[in-house]
Amino acid sequence: MDVPVTIGPPAHALLPSEDANTVAAAVSALDVRIDVKGAYIVDSVDEKEATVDDEDYQHEHNDIRLPHQHNVVSHLAVDIGGSLIKLCYWSFEADNKDTGGRMHFLKFPTDRIDACIEYMRQLAIKHRQRNSPPSSPTKSQSAPLASHESAIDDDNATSDLYVVATGGGAYKFYDKIKSILGVPVMREDEMECLIIGLDFFISQVPREIFTFGDAPGSHTFVPTGAFTHPYLLVNMGSGVSIIKVSGPREFTRVGGTSLGGGTLWGLLSLLTGARNFDDMLKLAEKGDNTAVDMLVGDIYGADYTKIGLKSTTIASSFGKVYRTKRQAERDAEDHGGMRNGDIHDPPTEPSNNTTHIPSTAPTPTPSTEPPPPADAGDAASRHIAFKPEDISKSLLYAISNNIGQIAYLHAEKHNCEHIYFGGSFLGGHWQTMATLSYAIKFWSKGSKQAFFLRHEGYLGAVGAFLRRQPVHWGARRGSVEGLFPLSRVGSRT
Image (tube, rainbow, N blue to C red; front, top):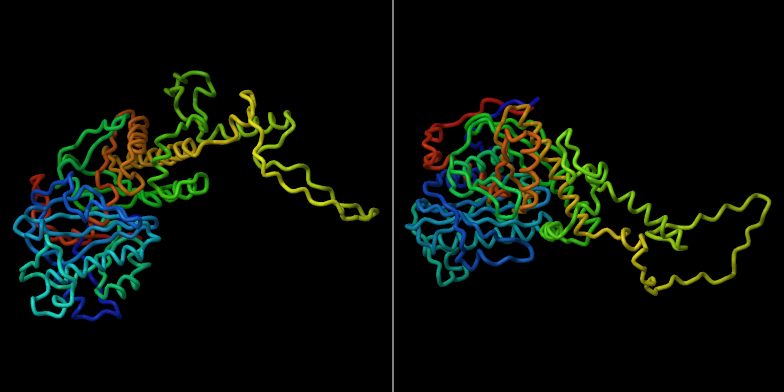
């Protein structure tokens, strides 16, 4: 049974392998409260480091500036999921703390965990170099700073860069991260971090939340703080979790589905030649799902107006595949050929009254010659080869529509008008957002609305980064709820 949970202050238990003094220093460093006043998104990136994408990771080009954060931030945050790792870290503007700094965002495939740890190690080296006392061995042994970098003079700074981790990988890769980086890894609850991250984006960051129309670019930004409780968060990663947020940072996980981004990745990797999720989305943009999906119009020949279904509504995902494939095979057989892996009738087993004599004839060598070109009337050549683009679009629609309908049903059950969609499954892909938005409008008859985020994949990482209650939390929406200590009032069972 799900029991509502109110997010309280983080509790950092001392593990047997951790030194008490080291953990105490890490917790002290995490006590620095981030000042979120005046946060805004930087659309144009002028730092070389933030514009380069390595084959192991993607550096997002939408940093968040915090102009009033003047103290050194001695931690980074990482959300390690089943498919992707999301990293959030801090740097000052041109290393001048008087002008504040920015939050950076990167993502790695989870199977590139070693590359992610190495990236964090390099950040830790730079952090030590900037914040160690001038005479310390760390300062003297580190590589020189770049020309635009300088050491930071901050009495509250610590030379170690600590790690705040969330997601399943925070447990799976805990020992590996800790041993390589040599610093404590503070693990935080995944669901709590998601809600903190979403609350930050909703209440503090202008031009972050938006609604989506039916065409590319047809989006409308929502003012900060323009939301009411309760609302749903549909977090779409490898799987999908649906969370009801009942009040300021109070939540209950009410459902989910195993059919999420991991499902799309897995099936498309089997069915197409796409090597990564971005390639899959690019294929889907070029595809025509009507080549493989069965539509209402394919069944009725027109709209089914009595129950409000347009002729273009998908009646059955991949519904044309079997019928088209079988018809092509029949046509091929009628023309004397076999298609798509069909085999002739298997040889019969010899009876007990006969002696099987192996053939001495040489085994025919399979021809490597390409098949003769088919004429325009050859149904097999026209229909048997389904395009990867069409398959990608069909499967994207299938999973998105499924998530949208499940989200609507939970919103209806729990009386939530607003539904926020987050997670790396979206990937900023307009067709996915348009599908989810349409599904919510269709099933709710316009009574509910879907909301999206520009940093949709980083809710958990940002929540972990801001796990300590930030300064000026809620200031934009005129609330004082963030000024009071929070405590846990329940637990999930």
